[in-house]
Image (cartoon, rainbow, N blue to C red; front, side, top):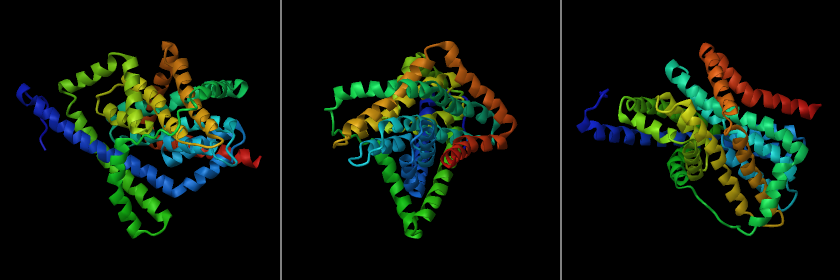
Length: 386
């Protein structure tokens, strides 16, 4: 298909509309793959995830468990909602103090999705050089937040105390439920795929593996075509419009990240969408960073809604751990983003890691897998053995 580099003024509107329609369709296929990936991982290991949660005692182990569980289900919304359920369980609830580090670990674990998505661009150097720092910056930011706030929480308990205080004020607002329209649409799109897989494979293990494989194929195919479509817009006015609207105010960009994430109830979706935009040259690292921070704050809505929907003797504890998640992300934002010198740390670190990744791509895959899975698993194993 011929794509004009510089459409004339008469055809510009049609050109943008056709590309926008194609981009929305490919974006839906891409998000369908992301959802299928999460469904596959949950089908493969949800019991293992709950076992991880129940085994926590040491704060550092709790952090690692939250990280591993979230990378397993590919969604901090899922893991934090499960944490809320465990803390608010009518019998043998998970202690609130044990759950706080797990929430922090979930924040780190949720960044694995957009990092994996960025690796799809490794075969195209120019795209990878733009996409990888946008993805890895989210990882670095959340790691810094944990490094700063976990020791402070262990010694002072300020997150738990703040959540307890506020929880008593809003405890009466219970029973509200919210269903994301996009999640409903994605669920409808996944249903025929899931039914087809279940009709061929009877056991959960093979079903999970096939579903994960199909989802990865959808993600990579849609991502490749989406970047080609978005790149065709770079030489039009669209690039300037996107850059101007998101660059006009960092606060606006943060609000955009919060709003989108609240709507779709997934920071993984929000931050993963930024990756192909960056790869296509439509979004710079500096413009993407505040959106990422907003996504961190917006993703707390799922745990809050889960907490507002629980009842029973430990419902208050469920609300408190959801508020801990909110305060953790807000505190991290206030500590890092307002001061320019500190704000530049994750940006420069992401750029430096990208240069290393470009020189050794295979090593990059190994490092990413080791950071998210290898090291946490090893530490968890050593901690339990010793």
